[in-house]
Image 1 (cartoon, one colour):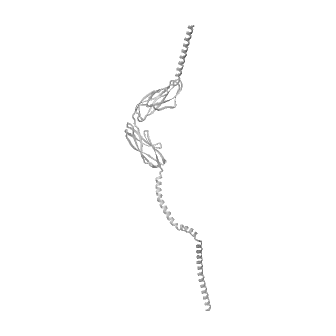
Image 2: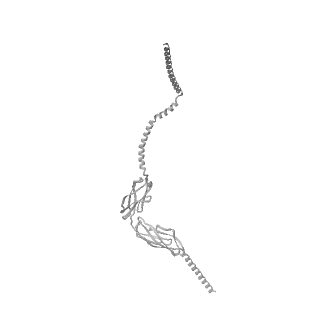
Image 3: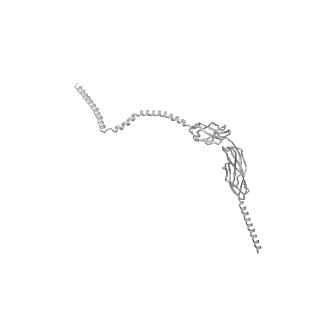
Length: 320
């Protein structure tokens, strides 16, 4: 009896142990299930000069059991993200691999031996690269002869400065409305500023406000300029001539006014006569009639004398 109980206890312990072991293995297997993106850095374009992009190549492999999608990031030596594979993210089936290319645009101050990393959600190996000192340029527009008249040449004076640590050659460009119109090649020492003049020949089709751009190896500055109509200067001269012509015109008008003064006076007099007192008008009419009567009376006396003289002559003739 005791022996049976002992065997039952042993069997129970064995079963519990087997169940526990089986359950543990299943849980471990369950935990192992999922995606795992391993990252391998396969190469770079280093060494580079600061200001150039550091290009990093990597291979991403899904060593897990399920398909997954992840964003892959390139981080600089400050662990800041400088480039990513985001849209679309890298999507891999189990045991599938994909090559990616990421870029870090270096700048002034990045020179030296530096580190970087390529990261997935599961892995983040680091790499190293050498970035050499480079030249950096700053350009500014000193002056222009704008505004100009269509057909004239725009003259633009620019200063180009090498703010980097090494001597280098640089191209300066002049563009109008994003079209390059002039350029010049320069070799500038560190800290040196070179002044040059760039030009552009305008035409009638350029009348209006245009965008002027000066650029030197990555640095650029822009400003608006005005191209006026070609006839504007002529118009100003014409306006000046028009003033002289206007004077002549005024003189002519004055002379014409003088000539037409009697008409003006007559026109001015006519309203005054309309405003004359009616009694005055009647008196004037009576005087005029009296004058006419007197004239008629004088004529009557002369006629009477002539008639008497004729009668006297006839009488005398009969007596003879």
